Length: 373
Image (cartoon, rainbow, N blue to C red; front, side, top):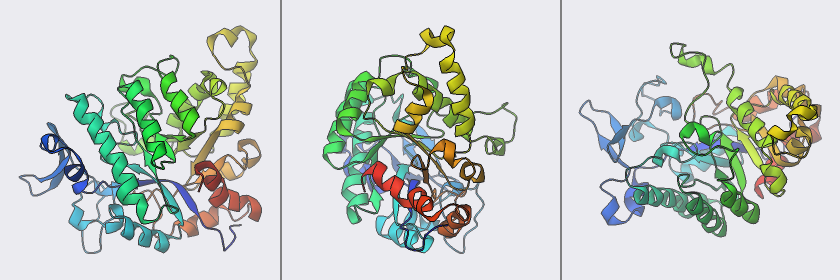
C-alpha cells in the first residue's frame, strides 16, 4: 500500500496558459498576431492567434464554485480555479490534492506545442515557443523549482531550431521536452527517417526526458467519424501503443543509449501485450531487415521507457512484466478526468495490494529519478 510519508509526484498535469503570457513576452511587433485573449460577440472568451479562434472547454479546467460546470461549455478565466494558471495557487491545489510535485504540459499550445505548427509566420511561431518555455522557467517553476518540474516545447517544423532550443532550455534548467507521439500524423517526417537525428543528438547530450502525451499527434484513434467522442476513452492507450512500437523498432534508442522516453496519459495496462507481440516480431528473422533496432524490445523498454496511469488495475496485476521501475503516476490536474481533490486517495486505492516499497517507487521515487528531482 501507499506509505503515509510518500510525497506523490505526478508526471502529467497541465498549465492553462495565463492571458498575459505571450503579450508580455513577445517582441512588440509580434504581439498583435501573437496569442491573446479576446471577448467574442456571444459573450464568451477565447484565444486569438493569427486568424485562429480557440476557446477553452471547461473539461480542460477546474471551475470555481457557483458557476455551471458542464464539461463541453466554454471556460472563462474569471470562472476557473486560479490553480489552473497561477503557480502559487497551483501549489495550494496540489496540497489540497495530496500531490507533492507535478510535471505540466501546455494547454492552448497543445501537448507538444504543435498549435504553432503550420503558422503563416514561422518566426512568430518560434518566438511563441521560446516565450512559453521562458514563462515556464521564469514565472511558473521559479515559485518552487522542486515541486513544479519544468517541461518545454519545441519548434517541430525546424529540426535544427528544435535542437538549439533543447540546448538553450536545458541550460536554463528544463528537465523534459514534449514531442509528438506520431510526427507523421502532423505532416512531419516520421520516426523511421533520419530527419530527427540532430534533435536526438541534443536530447542525448542534455539528458532531457522525451515526453509523449496522447493526442500530441493531433488526433486520437477512433473507429469512425460518427462514433461518439467518448468512444476514445476505452482504448485511450492505443495512441501510446503505436508510438511505443515506433520507439521500440526504429533503432533511435540503440543509437542514443542515454535517452529516456515517457508515455503520458496513455495508461500502462497495454504494455505486457505489446511487449509480447513485439518480441515475436523481433524474433522473426525474415522481418529483421524492416527495422533498425538491434536489441530485443523488452530490453529497450526496460532500459529507456516509462508509462504512467491515473487508475489502472490491469497494470498493477502486471508489474512483473511492466517493471516496477518503469511505471509512474499522474493526477492530470486540472483536466476533468482527474480525481481532484481526491487524487492521492484514488492512488492509494489503486496501490492497496502493492508492496509498500513498490508503491513508493510508483508514486514518488521513479519520477524523482526520471526527472532528476
